[in-house]
Length: 329
Image (cartoon, rainbow, N blue to C red; front, side, top):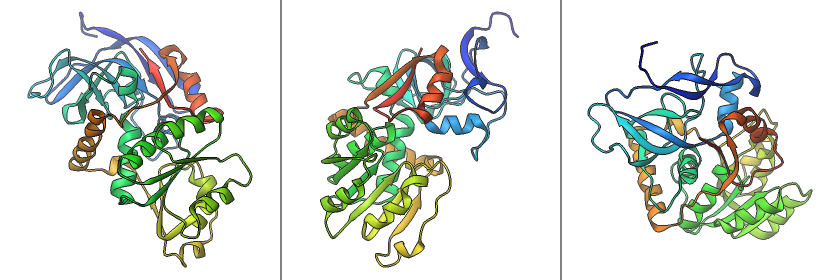
């Protein structure tokens, strides 16, 4: 290692596996920003379910080992590479796509994936924007093509993406229904844009949703756990309704006939299929939300970097989300 190179604490993964493969090291070299790159001193980093799939080795995209997980960070610009004009040292920023990994004291990001963080949001909230809000925005406006006046059911509305979907849908003039499994989760859903909330642990909650929406059904369902809910979702849709699949943890058996009478659609969404232009478009919509004030991330459980394995365990096996999970640095 070059003498004089700054060192930092960072989580490293040397082999795919369970949460125990997340190793906190204190002798990792601080990356140096190259052309069109920004180095961010990380204050907070969002934890997303997808990071647990990547770590386990079961995800379609496998990083080269060893690697540092994490894509959503907020912090202060430490340094910029050549040809970076939009940011300078000391700027408060967030990103949804680090190059070097976000579970670290410093993270590199390409300048076009970095955004200014308004003063009204703290670093924890900044770290909660990335994947959740960009995914929710893509799901609603790009994949579902929602229109004001339509109804949307956010299935699993109390986590990071769910809360983002409720806030965005309400701001865009939709009737918003949400589900959550805990009392705290349900309260959060109602406080963040939902007109009604249902407990998806209740045996008859689907009947309650049907009663609420009436004969017409729901226009759009944003689905976080398709392997559990997809079959029921298809029975709730209106004519021309669409289920947007944001998350699934395994296979499910459905009856394709359930899509026929109402000519409904099942559409998968993957944030990383977005073009550079689409990311800019989503960012503009979200920046407006921050300025106006409807975009307000809700922070859930918080962990120091030392407890990263516990965070990965809890995000998958916890008792029900209530806000966005964050690592603090």
